[in-house]
Each structure stands twice: as C-alpha cells, then as structure tokens.
Length: 296
Image 1 (cartoon, rainbow, N blue to C red):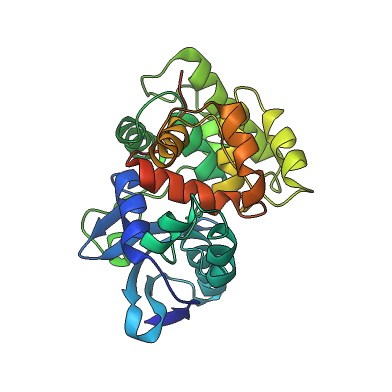
Image 2: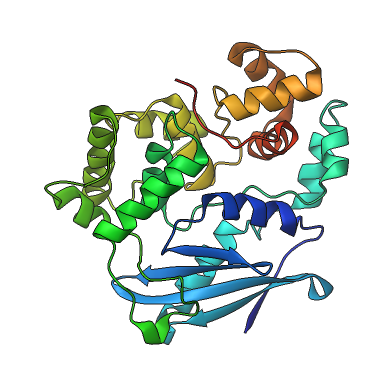
C-alpha cells in the first residue's frame, strides 16, 4: 500500500461525506471509512482503494492495475481528488480572518476542496446535476456508466460492487443515443461537452486566470456560469472558483448571516476570501447542510 502524506489537519469525515453522496453505482463505493473506484488510464482498466492513516498524516492507497507504468498517473489523480497538496494552515488562517467564517473553520479544521478524478468525467457529472438534486444526478450518472462505460476485468476489481469505468469523451460523442431520461437541452449539453473534450485534449487543463478559464468553458453549448465555475473548481482546480448562484452556497450564507442573501451580495462578500473562495464555498456548503446544485 502506498502512503501519500498531507499537511495536517485533514477533515476526512467531510471528504468521505462529499464522495459518498456522489458515488456513482458501478464506478465508486464508499464504505468502512474508505473510498474505492474503478480506474481507466489510456484504455487500461483497474481499481483503487483509499483510506485514512491519521497517525501517519497520510492516505493509504491500494492500487490494483495491470500496468505499473501507470502508477504515477494514478497517484496524481488521487492527490487531486483528495486535495493533498493544499497548504491548509495558510488557507484556514486566511479564511479565519473573516469573523463570520472563523467559527466554521474552527468547527471543521482541515476541510478540503475535493477535486475531480478526470476533467471530462467531472464536467459530465456537473451537467447531469444541473437543476436536480445530487441524489438524482448520481442515479443518472450510474445509468450513463452502465450503458456506455466499459467493464473492468474482475481480476482487477477490488470490490464486488465495482464494475465499469466512466465512458470516454469519444464514446459519448459518437453515441447515437445516450439512453438516459433527461430534458433535450441537457442531453444536448452532454453531447457538446463530449465533442469539445474529444476535440481538445487540453480542455480541462489550467488556462489563464479564473475569468479566462470560465469564459472558455462557457463557450461550450449548454455550459452556463454555475456549471463553468463548478468545473473550474473540481476539474481544473481553480481555488478561487466560486459558483455564486448555487442554492447550497446561498443557504449556507443565509445560515451564518442569519438572513437571506442574493448572489450579487454574496459575490461582494466573498471578495475578502480570495484567492481561496473554493474553500470558503466548501465551508458554506457544509454549514448549510445541503448539497450543491444549481437553482432553476
């Protein structure tokens, strides 16, 4: 088992809660204080298991994969999902400078901003989650994986509930029908994201500042401000991304402020949280007790 160190503190419970709520059937499992998922690296399939080793200030990673040359790529993705590179002491200290956020940081020291395993996967999950609950988006994603994801050989599956990898952009872009029950506009957006990702392998890599990144994503048909900010946060790891129209953020802000607010007021309020607004967003989501989705 590999051990990947982090800078303490680390809020493992909140990380697992986030991943558990979004675990796609067949692709991911969260149980017994560990996270498991299938892995696809350049068409070769396997699976991983991640658990917390708090006494070693590390995550333990078990990898079941046929090609040892892919291990660095897998480790990089694990580090991204679990936000292991965060200078959490600096981030927490900065956010604690706001008297409203300070109690939240004190309540959840070491709260991380979960990343996406793969940029394309994260973008598709974001589109699936437009205007519906996290639970509903999870079920749609499970259906998409079952219909279009490729099966992983059983000899490389760590858990019996894992079965398929996430479908590739090429597979979804070329599919005659996606086979999931969704409004036509969102189905069109899914196809547009798949086509854009297939046409540009660098689509989900850092590009300029946050404004330029969001503008590039918004040029894709069906990608609005919320979706672009969410993809920038999870996939591209823009730590100043802030999906301000998210109902979960607005609920969290109302919870800590004691009154409702508007996206415009929240955006102005968040200026002092820069350049760590993504972490402030995580605290607001946790404080509001709701999962992020975009309002209709």
